[in-house]
Image (cartoon, rainbow, N blue to C red; front, side, top):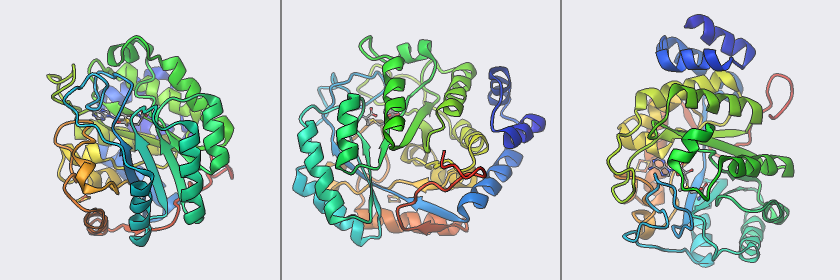
Length: 350
Ligand code: SAM
Ligand code: FES
């Protein structure tokens, strides 16, 4: 396996068969993580970037089988933050040193293009030194262009799985992988810094599906890839399925670092949920971003994508300081600033 790990580090790609072999065996993990850390350090030193996540609506028109805020979960207590509440989150975050805000929500038609443009302009006027990331799902190319013109810098849209058959098992008929991928290509062409990503251990996922994810990421060359374990939610069709493992998620993080050394790779909240030191282990496997929650404590529990989500009772300041302690305990430092991706060896951002 070392041979393939070395080749991935050298060439930044593998064939589908090679990916399947590496992902199935998951051998030489200590070696993989050591190489991944070395590469992350070459590009980012010992900095871990911090992004403030604002979960501004849990209304969702989609019905993905895995997600706790899906349309058909009638038990979900729905909320929307007002513009004023969102701006309060930014204000608090700014004071805590955050220079990136991520607006994430369900697919909520209440937030029309006009409302979003107004909000984006306001945030960028108040905080011109901050990067603004949107994560609001699939919209038309024209809408994406409008948000970009209004000042949005980045967009996160996990592709969830790059295998068509597997996509069908995770989503109802009206959602297609083609549409999701088209959105990602549109976002990239418009000029956003783009993040895709997938869940590890979602129902029906095989090594072949994960190999497809790696091939898609090789092709798309995103700026960020967000991956975390699938965790069941009790009010979804996948309530009885088993969760993804930290072991496999960490291994995929290590591989992604070798695939694209300057990638922004978050150690996700989901990873921190299934393992007490999940986020620290993520950084030690090659991750370099954390995204603590800036949403008001009163709504946190309601943005319940999966069961037992961590940090739902903690104030933004508590999470910020908790994370700082965790990151420093493993010899890294929390980096304030926008945390843009750095150039790769060829002088390209992507
Ligand atoms: N609506 C936007 C979208 O679809 O991109 C953003 C919000 S969506 C809830 C954010 C991400 O949560 C999804 O891309 C998915 O990967 C993740 N997620 C949803 N349910 C999950 C679960 N049960 N376990 C782990 N991650 C989950
Ligand atoms: Fe939220 Fe530790 S990161 S309490």
